[in-house]
Length: 248
Image (spheres, rainbow, N blue to C red):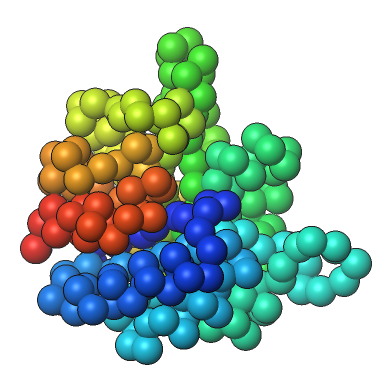
């Protein structure tokens, strides 16, 4: 099924998080026949999100996890802690983690491996900078991120890929449908080249996805959903994006 996911990043407080999830939970039941819907709140709001959504219709994930199971890693969170809190998913390799924290493909792969071992599903993020795109290196850069960030023998039903061009995250810019289509077709070929079973893996698009551009993006053949940033903080916008998804 197509995935519509919301990355809250470093936003929301308990009151606003609870109100948002309660509104979403009340409205998404008709959508779950053809969509998986996920929210990725900050770690301190995971319990709030879970408690505000008594049904399992809205999945909750962590925004990151450490590659070690435990230890002296102040400020970090293990995959097992996310599972214990009630999470089903975790994001790894988001461009903001890669740039702000210097995360390499090897680190992302190790985090994905730790998450899988703990029982989480993993959403692995990839994407190029504007300079890399303008220099004609976008396909090579993103392919290298995919191949370097996927653990060996990763089951096809335990992960999704999220393509987020760095230059389109939070900028209001969005890649053209032609650019998205080309990149997602390329990513599908990269995945299948790694493992033929990956033909069915969802490849989400992220990067200023909004209600007014969602339908066109989600209609593209190899776009398996959306990883939504700012628009996921407003129930009306997030639901509009979900409602824009094809029903088949």
